[in-house]
Length: 276
Image (tube, rainbow, N blue to C red):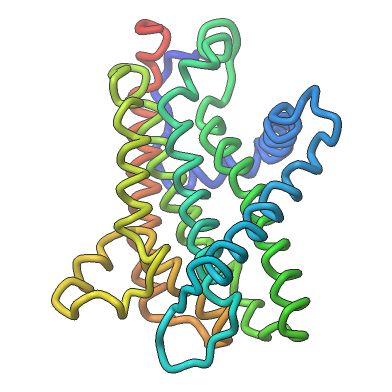
């Protein structure tokens, strides 16, 4: 197989690559997750305790210290603000963790580029796989916390994978694009952290979208995290069904972004070895 040959960029080739390399993706994702806690006493258990500690801190600070309230027509418990905040943090962290790593994925795996024929397109997939693992653990902690406090769980939680899937697709497309750009433009990694911090405050993480003036809300909806955060809260906390029309439109855009990111990555990958 010629590593410098033109790579396919169709959606069909993307699906085939992900399917044929599924075992390798799982192995590398597992190695990524385990390697993060290598040498620690509790190992992967930290992935459970970290969100547990964060949720406990959020609950204490916002329900006891600040006595914060979310607002709206639904009755609120003392811990609801912390739960709603934690939902937003989980969604933002999934997005931010993947994109913060994306520009360095090829740079940190030069051996895969130069020495062997390797499906480089799966590197962003393993990055989002590791981030998704931690997001799932955090969501599990949140669900346990919700059940302990309320004694029930909304049946609409079954829609959670459907709500999160479009964000995963969009994030993967952005990761492919940034992974390629990071090879040719090393400075692209520097502003990513700042952009993610801006997105944290420009997303309805610490506040409901209804807290903003009506004239501002359409602009906030351009934020790729806004709809997913709002819909995740809807199915997990408020027990309402998702906005299917909005999710369908988001999924179409996400699929387009993923294809563009993948096509860009495939078109530029033959130049990686020359630059590295």
